[in-house]
Length: 526
Image (cartoon, rainbow, N blue to C red; front, top):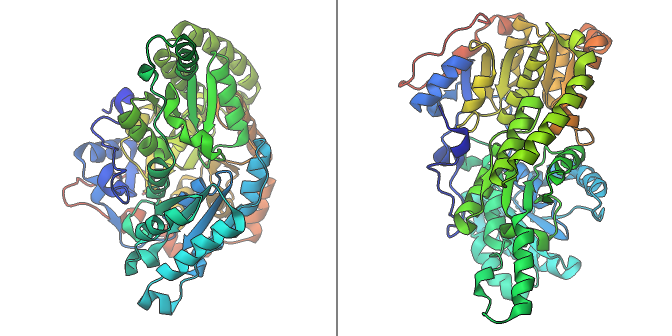
């Protein structure tokens, strides 16, 4: 059993002297290839052998570059340089509008996302691409005068050995912008979430400054002592609420509302933050994680470097987990009594609000797919409303999610750990036939063609976290179950591109299990 209060115990984070962070394969030993039950997954994680699993056939995975740039390109007055072949920048086109809308929602300047591509070709693969990178940095400085220039290193320059750190070090005296290298070559790790660590490694190395040292004030300077004592008091009540790409504006408003009700000052960082705000991250009294998959590298380093305490206990989705998340913050900040009063008030109001949805949801079955901490907290909430969880599909699974297995009532609930692999998941869903599927947009497009109603696990303009988010989740699910006409019409007119032989196969035959591991429990879905 992993102690929820010591989830970072035994992990080291002070890697900023290194060019790039260690991969998650080495650092936290997760798995992205496991099919079985909650109980068998717990046993495999306990033995430490699930990390060796792989697949005979893999369909559709993410890109570390996309995840890393998804963080750094949101900063105010930043230019992102993608160092690689032209295709590596295609994702920016689709997300440009997303970022601009998010900035407007948060009251930030709704500037365009500025990115430059070095467009490496066959000649550059042979001769190297550092000349193009150097020219791109100088062009960005001259044309846009940004506060920061971020260079995202893709697979090709990583393979041919372009030394982007040496190029940026050479150019630092020639430009006013801070130069941030981000090493997110996709071949380095099986785990796409390593891209988050790459982005935060660059941020920590180049942008975060040491906090003001109160104790350095000369004795006798009363005015300066009073000023710095005021800063110290403010910092002790300041909380960094660490937002991620899957945090909507509504989520940020709700979580900020809850923490402000305890008398805390809330900084929502680092996405869409100004460089001056990011530089002062080390001055807060507490770092609060929303998602361990995104944040552990960042808060672990800030703890080791500055001694800043952290909360990485759970993700505040649903009643139980929002209360748990809030209690740990209250205890850490010395606000236990105030926290309990707030929880009692918010919980009673929420329970009354969701009561009309319970008759609709009770007795229905559900499958949840997406990020590990998000799907377990979402599943637990729907379970508390009377629904039965048939299965879960986390993109990956690591030590941070092990305690959440306790929240699933049936230990034989199916678990399919996979990044991508929609064809594999569809075999489970066709056999189990859940009443409702909750997942990311890409997955929902596949699943609805089985005739299963779906709702999104996340949406930019919607609210999922905190007390108001729990109400919205319940309302979305009830609405989807009351009107299933869309899924019925789609399954009648848009077939899936798989033969019956595929649906008759056993998906567990695709897993190459570690020889040190006992075979997972074969559930009734087989």
